[in-house]
Length: 236
View (cartoon, rainbow, N blue to C red):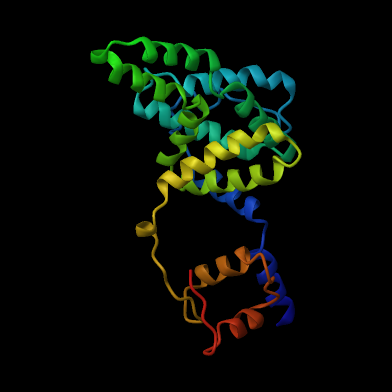
């Protein structure tokens, strides 16, 4: 019995990122007839030779003339490609996103001068252009994931990885801040539903509790049952 319990726990407690990667690979699918599905082929460590291909793909995601279906498919393929990368590859991916898709200082300066010198009747339009210039292209690129199944979860996990990586790569700090700002704009207390978890909750929910507990690791199902006893309260 102990062996069976241990196996169940080990199966239910992969790393959080690994769980996300496996899950999103299954649900992020593109139609088999989609001819662009196999165009983005990246090595797991994202070798320097992959950078140009990745930049071209990201540029394509940002094209204004893309219809909704094409934009979604390109975002799916970009996300799946990111999930296939190893730790080094994901670091290089994020560094490329940070360095190539930040704000354009010259464009901001031009828009500011246009707003500053605009006559009163054109000041509102010039102000809108100035505001838009302050949003880096990477923000628009990341926003596309919001329309995908569990795309917000993908971005939350990406930010978690950025929080660790920016200690080694300070140049990722602005990307992390952009992503934080984006997530804050989406989350609202009204979107949350608080539920109590107890031993009668679904097996799927209990497995998630085992997998996601990061402070005090849950050692076994008996350990979990004890934590959900009648004198304890657990909410999610």
